[in-house]
Every structure is written in structure tokens, then in C-alpha cells.
Image (cartoon, rainbow, N blue to C red; front, side):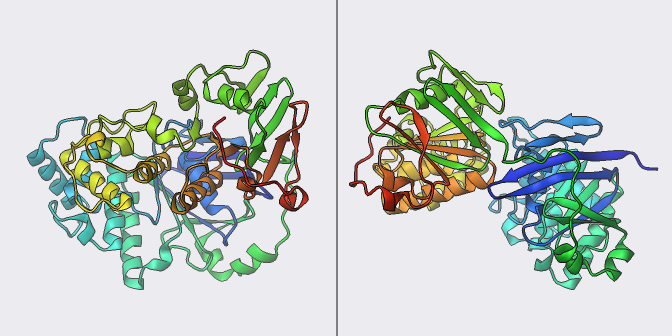
Length: 483
């Protein structure tokens, strides 16, 4: 019998309104190709992100090679796990050799050695393209093969593939399935997510997922003969054993004088205040500007105390407001470095020239800069407007993982385009499980929040109406001021 590679025990993850993963148990053996099939809303994408370490879970345990995996905000993924999505992680303007070998180099690149090594890898896996061929010239199935080979070179033991099998023709699908069987001989395990009507042929076992629960485990022959869609829609779910979480994972709990607040994963909460109020002290304690003199802050159930913005960032607490670009962007660094560098990880300082040029071109396209500057030109010499600096900061901010996002009067100086992009990022972060807390002295700017709080006359934080509060309290339009 093959050894067990992956084991999920009682995995739970709650979203506002319903559970995304509900006491899920699953196992995967080494060298096995397992298919998880489910309809839209069954929890497939959430499970893929939890398995790869992109989002935390509320409860339960994940074991990989008998080692328990713990979510860490500063890591993009669990070690040994590769997550391939429909959105390719390859850099299209670079060559096949650069995409294959540069992620495994340290600092200096020997181009002849990189090209020779890439050619050897392509021959080993019988891939029909050349090392100097640009990735943008490859078809989508060939790009997927290249990503699989790169995952194999990164010594990943588990490859998680999202459901996009409907994009391929029958001929392309047959070729990809044969390639998966070829990689299986390299002692790789695959976890494939699919719709019930598009189960890949190489799958050795099929698990049906419904409302975050694994309801059946079938062989491919049984899955081909069974009415899967009917089971996934109509079969009553068994009641799980043990207590059921009432809400999502509690990310933040404040126990300050007059301020008692619980904020859950995926929740967007707004705090409306009138100056003067304790809002400045609360936000300052969260961001490390002014540690709380009394009381206690809990982040994911552990005592939280930050003495600086850097300490807050390292613990997964980020700030976003209209003054952030002037504080967070570095005038002496280039566009590419500012796009990748984070407050606690200088990941953008050692880039190859081609990667730097590609990132500079992407940043110029997003910022609307007509001419391409030199990749090494510092930010202070580009003459960017305030709006362009804000969009650059948002582009970098969207890449950063976070447990808690604190926004202080974010709509004061925003134009409509920047405001729309800001709201998109807030919703994206909430969908990833990040808790969002917004402080504003303008009630009309908090209409999209799922929960609303306010400070009363005694400066105590109390719940406010969450739905029709704008009709119940017609407030005159105000201008945001910083906390």
C-alpha cells in the first residue's frame, strides 16, 4: 500500500452567511491522482487555497508527509505544494529557459548554463518547444505543461490544479492527461478540482464535495455511471459530529477601556466616529503608532502588541489610507522594486534585467505612462502624479498577504477611479479571508460594510444599524480627516 502524503482532519472555514469548509476529512496517497468534484459554491476554490497555504482555516489540521502545516502570512504557500490556477504564473515576455531556471537561481545568472539546463529538461519531458522561445508564443496547454515541469523542478510533492478543463479540446485534453500520467512516474501526487461533468480521465479516485463536506468517495467507473449532479444537489448532508462554529475565525478581539470588538475572517466592519473620539487611540494601537496603555488586543487568539508599523506588518496587520503612498513608496527605488518590495521583505531588490524590464513595462501599462523609462530609474525622477502613486501603491498592496487590514478615512482624496479600485481590493481581500476594519467620520462612506459600529456620547463603542442606517440617520455630508 502506498504511503499517505496528505491528510485533512476536521477542516472548518466559515464565510459570512455560510461555511465554506464544514468539518472536511480527506486523504491523498503518494503518487495518486485524486479528483475533487463539486458544483459552483461547493468550496473547491477555498479548499485549494487552504491546501496550498494561501488562506488560513478556522479549525482543523493539515498534514503533509506527516508534518503539520501551519498558515504563515509572510509565506506565499506551504513548502512542497504547488498551486496551478487558470491565471498562469509564468512571465509571458520571458523565454522558456528563463521561466524554468531563473526561479532556482540565487543572484547571478549564467545564461549559457541556464539555456543548456533548460534544453536538457525539455528533452527529458519531451516538450516540443525551444529554450529561447518566448512563453507568450506558446498555447495554453503548452504553458500548463511548462508550469507542471517547473513545479517538478521545484521539488514539489503535491500539485493542486484548479478546474479549467473545459477550456481544452478533446485532443488537447487527451495530451494533458497523458502528460499527467508521465509526471506521476516522477513520484508526484496530484489533486485535481473539476466540475462533475468534466472529471479528468487519469483520476484514480473521485471525491464529491458539497457545501464544504466530502459526501462520497468513488472509483472512476462508479463516477461515470452515477448521477453526480443529482447527488450534489439533492442528497441530504449528514450532520457532523462535534460543535459547529457559529461564525468565522475570530481575527481581532479588542479588550480596551470602552472598546469591545470582535472581527471575523472575511468581515468588513466600519467604525463611524465624530471628533474627538477614541478612534485615533484604537487605530494607533493596531498599527503600532501608539501602543495601548491599558487593555489587551488579541490577533487570532494571541496577544498582539506592536510598537512600530514594521512590527504590525510582520504580524499581518496592514494600513491603507490616502497618505500611504507617500509613506510606503521608496523614492530611491525603481518602479519594479517598488512593485515587489514589502515593509518586511525586500523581495524586489535582486532581479534579473529581463524580469526588471518586464515588471517596469507592466507597471507603466497599469499607471498609464506612455514612454517606458529605464528599469533602474528611481521613482523620484519619473515625475508621477498623486493618482499614479496611489495606483502603484494599490498594485503592490494587492500582492501582500494580510490577516487584518486597517483603513483610516480612505476616501478623503480619492477620485472615482481610485475609489472603485480601492473597493475592488477590499472585496478581494475579504474573499481571501482577511478581516477589514474601516475608520471614518463620514457615515455615507461606510454603506458597503457588513457590520457598523459607532462611538456614543460616553466614547464607548457600540453596534449601529447594519442595513438602513442611512435612512434612519440622515447625516450631512462631511469631509474625512485623518484619525
